[in-house]
Amino acid sequence: MQRPGLQSLLDLAARGGLDVILCEALDRLSRDQADVATLYKQLEFHNVRIVTLSEGEVNELHVGLKGTMNQMFLKDLAAKTRRGLRGRVESGKSGGGNAYGYAVVRRLGADGLPLTGEREIIPEEAAIIRRVFEEFADGYSPKAIARRLNDDGTPGPRGGPWRDTAIRGHRIRGTGLLNNELYLGRLVWNRLRYVKDPATGKRVSRLNPESDWVIQDVPELRIISDELWTSVKARQLKIDATPAVQGIRKSTFLEKRRGPHLLTGKLACACCGGTFAAVGRDYLACSNARKLGTCDARKSIKRAVLEEAVLDLLRDRLMQPDAVAEFVSAFTKTANAERASETASRQQAAKALKELERKLQGLYDAIADGFRTPGLLQQLEELEARKAALHSTCRRPPLPRCASTPGWRSSTARRSLSCRRRCATRQSARRRWTCSAG
Image 1 (cartoon, one colour):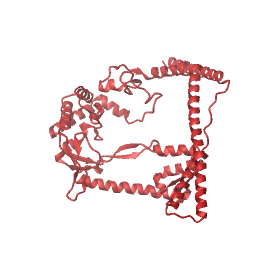
Image 2 (cartoon, helix red, strand yellow):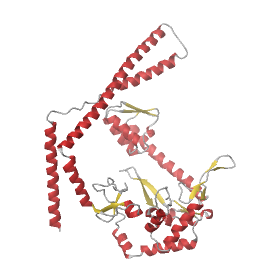
Image 3 (tube, one colour):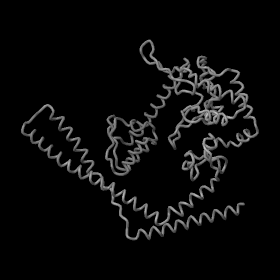
Image 4 (tube, one colour):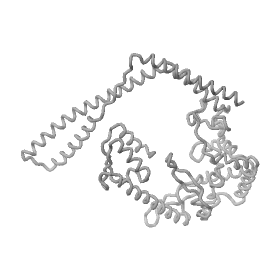
């Protein structure tokens, strides 16, 4: 349901721009049983029918039966795909994706077909991998290693700057440079599985039991020696045993899903344009300055202070009557310009439709008089399709014209003053609560 095209379809249906959705089969809209049911309910609410070449007009019976069958097909297809990938991994080939330090080999086999799943070492990146392992074994932190690589101008795995998370990763999940066993010449597959979050539609990784892992030796892909790998793992275990790390694990802080705050994802550094990130429980700072060292704005700001400053600006500037008046004027001008353009398009479509109907009537008269040519039927079909498209354009409901009432300025002023008073009351209540809590 999160696909942009599907959301555009639902939005068009909600605005009355659709009567019928025609597609090859119901699974072309979605194979997810819950999504199909939700989609059908929403379209039915907007009086939009679904007609497919396979099922005809879709009803509740199709949604229940075909939705279940499509869901089972998805699971069966996933199982077959995984069996095929497992066979490739057991033969020493890649099971999908690639890792830093390797390039995908593209060549043809003896039968002329392309070979898939082969990789080769990139010498330049392999040297960087050894450097990262050696510096970590010598006592450098992932953050310090990332800064040293960025200072040297070494591009990261995706061409951008290095980040400490790309080096550190997750030891148990096997992510990050320091935990990739492929550098040791050991291919580990099926360590993680991915499930879709029904609320967001995004995939979430889950750790599989170790008994489900598929491990295959690939000595030709080894980059790190056993001694260097062992020293890195020993230092990781030493770090894990520190009281600070043990305290974090006991608190399960990292496993908790923290909800978004008021300004989550909306802040950017004025110096470098980078994003802001949490640097503690209640503080925010530029992530480029704190993690990469590429920005000089290292000062952190308390989240509550920053939120209060933003709300003050909204209250004192955005909700001023003059600012609101300017916004309403610009919005009205833009909306009416779009309406004028849509009206002109509608008039052109009506004119074209009238001309097209005249042409069609002439062809009908010619056919009635016995006129026949080889391309006449095709020409009629094309003209009829064009006529249907123009009819659809002309039948669309016109956009409403925006107009401001004579008393809108005074009304806006009253609402702005009311909003500012509510904000001031909330601010005063927050300050009283803070004082009583202290």
